[in-house]
Length: 188
Image (cartoon, rainbow, N blue to C red; front, side):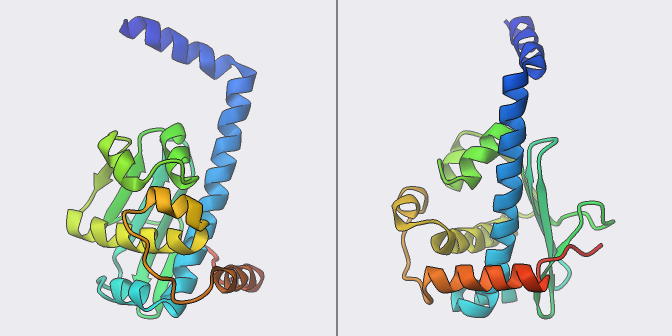
């Protein structure tokens, strides 16, 4: 049975349609992780719940999300002024990192098809680091998803729907402004 699965996986890797689909998923994940970081960055300024959660983090602590072995990654560090995105090539090892086991499983989570809790129940990711800090990070991501996804999706993927402190449109406008000013640049 195991040999059959390995043969099937090897055949899929050579299938051009499968490879194209996989590259499309990686591209979508890259964009979503960028917008997720931008949302967290902006909500640190706009949302008191996000600001309180991040303010409780130790300075210099590194948080990360990795989408499969060869998928996109997001790493950021707590600084005195909030958070700063850092390169995956930096010498800093993440203190807390959610590592999805495959690009496909990560795709389901980042596109809002399943919740983080469902992904945990399906063993779709491995957690590296302290569970308490990871839960704090997950709360920030959940709060950010509340602003980034429409209510129809958030109702399905979040345990509870809190009230937004600012309109979603305002958050998206701030994200766009930050993109044009280079606020989300990666530092080494």
